[in-house]
Length: 411
Image (tube, rainbow, N blue to C red; front, side, top):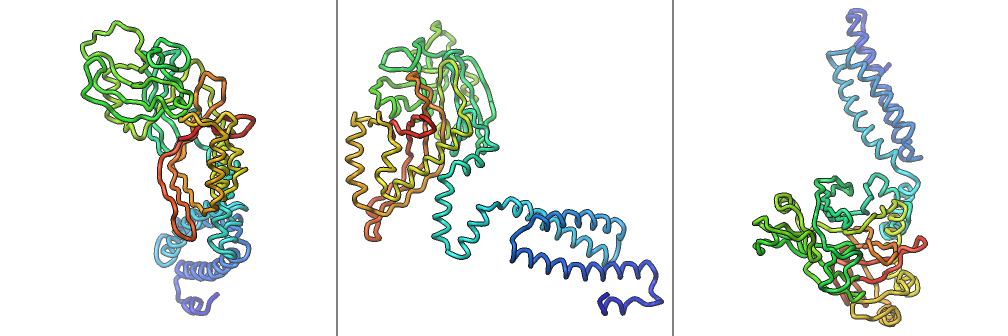
């Protein structure tokens, strides 16, 4: 027992106070040893498993002590210890989550600095297992979402329209209702074919003050998108709109738009920001993407970016489908020639991708397709100075074949 404490205990000290002081002394001695053990463990093995389990046991012990000793310095000490253990256990949840990869990152930063650590992080982004862990608790029935807050989904066969709220990658159905669509089957190809397109589309605006025939408002889609344009599909003005305000509509089909109840559309109009919403349209059954496929695609996206950054022309072009085409009609060979000239400059590049979303792209060409969209912050450097800079929204329309991402066209 420490001398300062033991000197306070005498024959004249009441028995219960003597017990409390003894316990206080024991706790004081224990925590000096405990803290020393913690520091040794932290700085030598960086292993928290036993330490956290030990803290969990101590938490129960000190709760008991606090219940038994309800006054004086012993109670105060117990309360402080309880707070200490709660903090340690909260930190322990994080510490126990550190796996070998995280330990490797910490060690790399400690011994080789931030640049080498950044290189390792870039490698993790190219790994399928990293993205698989990211997707583990996500709702991926309609893909992977960053930056979007709402998703409209329309099945032309029903026909219907559903609205989902997207929160942290998880979807909640807000409303599903019947809809009117164009009478044409399959995908839209030419203007005037009275067909609602199938695919994945952004919205370009929320329209109000329309002729009464279209109801209270409309959401305008970006049909034809770049994939449609590459296939020389024509038409436009594909909206989600309402029904005639006078209630006089005899047609059971639209000319290609999606029409729904006015009251519901007005409710949607109050909540949905068109800039943060997307539309997926399909016919029949929509194949749900697997987490495994999405993880593969997300890792491939960063592998594509890495090849681009490092001016690795062959690795970069390997991500492009043999049927690749641009909206101007140019094919893969012309694209290769252009990129060969660009990569020959051997410019240093910084490419940051954010707000990444990967969704299935329905089509009637029997392809397994996805739409990969993201914000791309691009900077190229020559002799230490910026030679080119851009920051824009980019979309890749990709075919997914034999576990490989193959770009069909891009915007």
